[in-house]
Length: 187
Image (cartoon, rainbow, N blue to C red; front, side, top):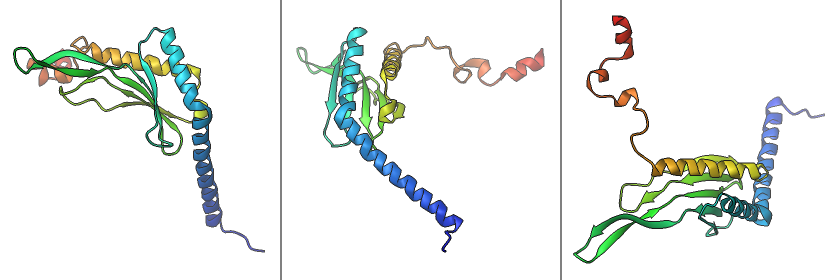
């Protein structure tokens, strides 16, 4: 009778795990197409209506199995413009930000915040990843938490100023070169 070595048994377990992961990818993609995409759209629309958030919820389906549901706060004139001549002005467009539920290559869903940005005024911030989820993990409470984090981050972006206490790294004057350990030595 042939006995498999420990190394071959470990390799066989890894192959089984690999097959399970591939099967999960197919299953997650099926769930997205059969129900999850519409559930995300419905949850976002329902929550947006309940909290009176003006937005658009769309599905971006350019690539099969890499679709995304996007809750967008839209685009507006930023209030800034370039004067072309005395009568003509070129307005800078402000993108107000979006919350994105994007399929990954493996069928899992990544949730991202795209921060607001103004075209022609600096570079947009990279998206913030909230998390990566298996389809069964995305339940109603998650959508509320994601929307709350989105609104909090967008509000901070909109209200950017010097209200935040300055860190020691940003202090100027004598305190820049003298740390708290010197102060404690003098005491």
